[in-house]
Image (cartoon, rainbow, N blue to C red; front, top):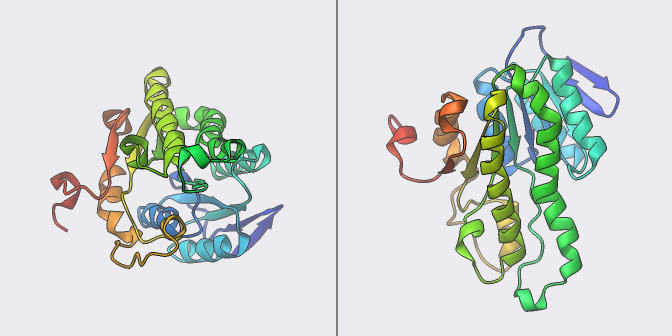
Length: 255
C-alpha cells in the first residue's frame, strides 16, 4: 500500500512491528545497499536523499521486500528535513539504527587553490548534519540501546593531495564519532565508523571525471560486512572503525 504523509511517502505493506532504521543518502550507491541489507533483516526503514524520483524508486524496491518504508526527500543539512526523518521513525514506533551516509564531496584540488567559503557546504553536510541528526535521534535510540553508524573514508587518514577539504571533514566526523561513543555509553547508545573503501559509485566518478572506474567494485561488495555488523551487539563495537572491504574472516566466512 502506498500512503502519502505530507512530504513523505510511506509504503507500508502490513501492521507488523519491526526494528527501525534511518539511512541517509539512500537513493543509490552505498546507501541503498545498506538499506537493502536492513530490509532483508526485517527492518522498517526511513530513507533520505536530495532527489525525490530516485529516492521513491528505491523506496518502492525496498517495500517490495516486506518492509514499511518512508521516503524523506531533501537536504540533510536542512533542520526541517532532519526533523522529518526522526519524526518518521517516531511514527514507526522507535529507532534502532541510524546510518549517516549522506555526504558532500566538494571540489578536488590543491588546498592552495581551494575556494575557502566552500567549506561552508562541505562541513555542514559531512559533519554538522550527522551530529545534529544524532542529537535528534538519541532519545529514540536510547530506548532501544541503538547504534549510530557514521560513514567515513580513508581520505580522513591518508592526507591525499587534492582531497584536503573532504578528508578534513571526514577526519572531524571520526573524532566526533569516537567522542559520541564515549559520551553516550551511559545512555546505552553506541556509535561506530565504517570506511566502505573505493567503489564504483557516482561520487567516485565525480572525483575522477576523466577516468574509467569500471575496475572498482560495486557497493554490493560490502554486503557481507553489513550483515556481520548488524549481527553484533552494538555496545561491543562502539567506538570502533571498520574497513568494509578488508579481508576479515569475521564477515567473510561462508562467503
